[in-house]
Image (cartoon, rainbow, N blue to C red; front, side, top):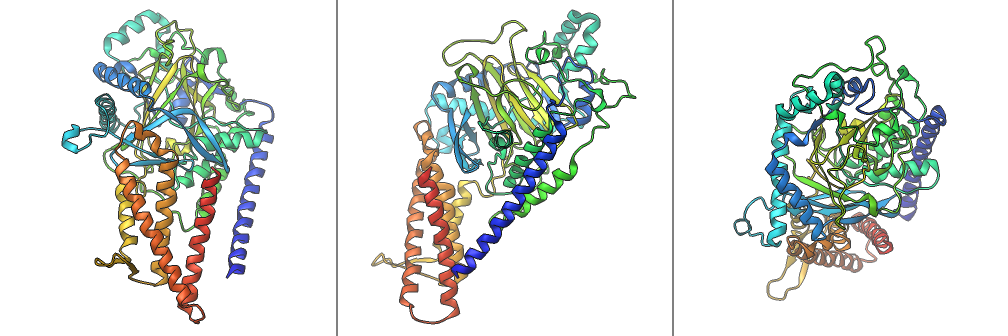
Length: 594
């Protein structure tokens, strides 16, 4: 049996080594093609910006701050400051390429009661929305300030869910009130039409992830990719699939993203224009969407850009094939109205960071969050982001200053594509943006640091088929249904000794321990200081886990009692139990090391 296991493991390692070698070869080819050049990117002031947005980034929609209800701004911004004041935003220790790394961004998760969100081998446990009064829901788990903050973010979540469902195909920008538009156009005079065009595409956002630190060019690039969203988050559904694909695509697309400045003759955007909020040129908005002012029709550089689709598809399939039987089928695609079930809140103060890395492939500037896909989401569901620039927790403020101060921006690029220019979108405080359709899966985004501290509330439809409290409680009941307890003596016995039953029970045993209990006690319980919602359920899960430990001992005792007896059933039971215990031992050692 041991020989069989070693042989199987050897085959898996060989396949894994072959695929990693192929990825490295692809990355080298892309780096060679790019040479020492940077890939071009466009910002609002640049010619061809509108056309690039329309042709290659059409899934991105901007909602300006002035088009969001003022009272909602007040409640949401007060809520974010409350969470920071109470210390609810914490850095996560995530797992990247067998290394533990702290995120640069501090964060917390809010959402539907009992929901979790998993990324980079880390499970976050949601503080509930508190969408109803605590007395009604029996949720006296937070103080009144935190409860009110959570409810304000639920109101924002509701606003986003309704708003994104009402967007029409082709919508790219939600306009401000007419008076502001007219005033802005008046100020800009003859240049207004160009600015309004560019401005339509001027904001973008962030959403989760963090920046990595690495050594040589290839490993550095790949880890930056991973950190962000190989988010993933995802050990459970098809998310990991996307995560692994992005990791590779990140390398290739990033490594490739620095040489073809030539396609179509599209120039890279001047850095001095991108780093500032350019007199807020993007702010001008007209009532109708005009055609891009950029390149003449005959130029069509964007339309002719070549995509490296063969690599993209090949590696996505490759990643899928590596998932193994423990990975469920890909998450279902979203149909019907959007209902965001969690928001990942991020906070970062650039002044508090000792060093921010430069974006390496386009020269876009300092990165707060590296290139990534958001992971562990229901397929084709949108992501909605609220951006709030504010004073730092030391009371220093950078908002409201001159238009020359560096502002926060989102950078976007097409995954596995070294020819299509990147796009940058400046963000003013209170701006929101949506990533719709398949934008999150076919493109990658990064967050480029401004001067002020910044919050982002990133609302998403997380794939939670195996990530809710209800789910894991039902799994516990499945396993414990095989345990019989004598009411008089309290002694335990097993209902079934079938190898299939044993295998099922031990899989649940491992899932409870490594996907829930250890994740919670390792990092999740930090939030118990602010919200006690998870305390009771996790204590019950631990009691169920102890009963599963008892079941394992009963299986072992049964095998010992039958020692010396021949039989296919006993051999199969022994092999099943050995496999489960070996896996458990290895995972426990990994957690001890962490």
